[in-house]
Length: 108
Image (cartoon, rainbow, N blue to C red; front, top):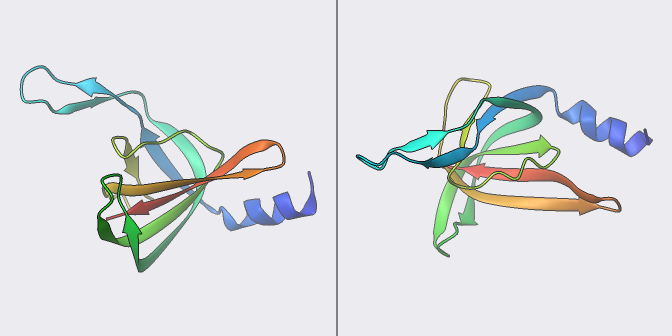
């Protein structure tokens, strides 16, 4: 493994859980989710303006960098190391020379 990859992984000292949304309940429209999966991450609390999928500026209070690209969407559910499940408001995906490398998630 290249040195830069090892250094990047050293920053990912936390673990998050995520559940992909699989659909909505017929009565009430509540979301249903798939099995819990885990990923290495770095979670940082700081405020910044981000643009949500509807093009609106919103304040993000927490950012998580996730090693790998689980393909999260704003409809999925993420549990942070502190047990909170904030709403996802923005997702960025970053490639390296081999393809997609990591995701940066902004939470409300």
